[in-house]
Image 1: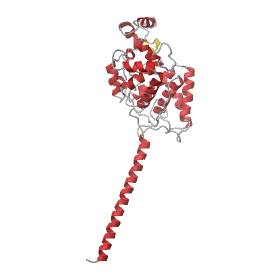
Image 2: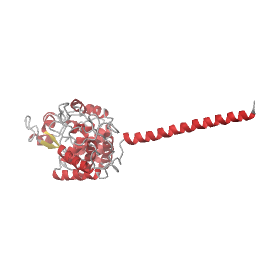
Image 3: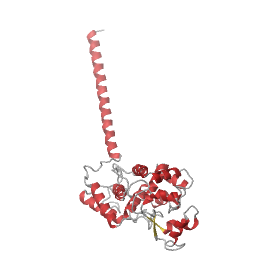
Image 4: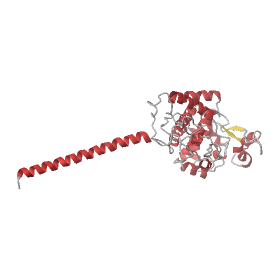
Length: 336
C-alpha cells in the first residue's frame, strides 16, 4: 500500500473528526445560549424592569405609601389581594378581572365577595406605570410589589420581589371558591390547602401572620364568638356587642386587637391567649403540630419576619405566566 496515500487518508480522517468536533461544540454552544435565553425569559428575576422601566418599583412604592396614608386599612387589603391572586391558578392578576359576557371573574367568589378590596388603588398605580412605561409592567407584578411595600411601610420585613410575571386573559370563580381556605378551616384543611400550592407547614404559620394587620367582617367570626370553647371568654364577649347573633354581617373587627395597623408578632401572642379572631387563626395554636411555630414567632419577631419574607417570595413564585404566556394588561380590570 502507498505510504503517501495512507498519510492522505489519515489526514482526511483527522480533518473530518475535527470538523465533527467543531460542529458538536457549536451546537453545544447554541444550546447553552438558548438555555440562558429561556431561563432569562421564563424565570422571575429581581432586576426584570431595571432597563425596561427603571422607575417601576419607585412608582409602586410611592403610590402605596400615599394610599396607606389616605386609609391605613388598604395596606392589609393590598397584601390580601396578592394572596388571593396567587392561590387561584397562580400569581397572574386574575383576581383583578371584572366579570364579562364571556366569563364570571373571581371577585364574586365566596372568599372574595364583599371582602377583597383596594381595586381603585391598583387602578391608580397602574395608570402611573402606564404613563411611565406603556405596556411594560404587569398587573401581577404590581400586586406582588404592592404587597411587599405595604408590609414594609406598616413596620414589617422587606424582601426582594422577583419579577417578570405576565397577566392572565381569563379567571376562574370556581377555582377561587375551592382554592382559597375559608376562615372556618380546621388545621387539616389549612395544611392541605397550602400544601396544594407547594407551601410548607412553616409557610402556612408564617403567612398567617399577615393577620397582624387588617380587619374581618362579623360574618367571618360570628360562629366562633358564640359557639366555640377555644376562645377567651372576655374576648368573645367584647366582640358580641358589634357582632350580634344575626344581622350586621359587615361590621368589622381588628384581626389583631392591639395593633391592627402595625405589622408585628402580636397576632401570635394573641393565639397563645386564645384570642385569635377567626377559627382558622386559633387552629394554628390548638394542640397540633403548628403550636411550636406559633410559640417561636410569639417569642421572636426577628425569626417571624425572616420566615414571613421567605414564604412571601415562595408564594409569589406560584405558577407565574412568563415569556410569551398571557399578556401585559393595559387596564388591570380587563383583558386587552
